[in-house]
Length: 160
Image 1 (tube, rainbow, N blue to C red):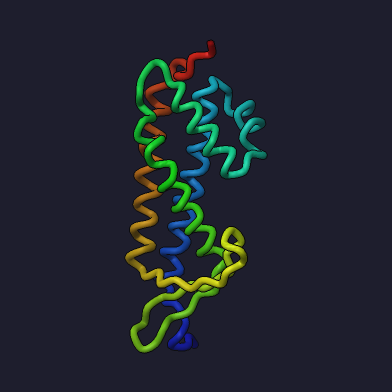
Image 2: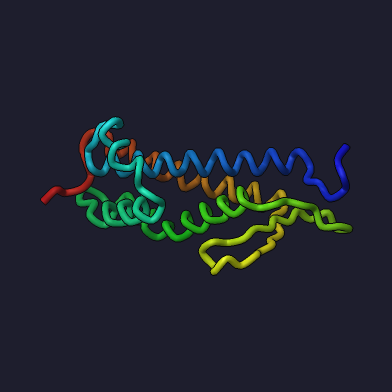
């Protein structure tokens, strides 16, 4: 039997949907790097499989800045910070211990943050925030997929 301070099943499902969509976004970010460099999937995986998030963001930003055939990644450059914040929030959610604050029934996530001197942080992350995070990840992923389709015939980055 669930205690009143346990999260509802639908909230756990929403967390799972955020995790899945952000993982799809990260995979698409890797595919965008492969496409920009003109690499096959297998060769691209060799390049990006050991990249941490900061290296992946740096690569995307640098490659987007060098796009000579079109300016299709301009929006991505502007949104890389938002994507990074979204992925950090996802990581926080995965490390967090969840509970429901009574009597309001608000979902609270609490965890130590490595990047902030080990500070212990608690945040309210209601169901609506989970839906918004999932939608944000989906929009960013779809924008990258459009760029990948646009550049399907040849690399977009000038190799000179």
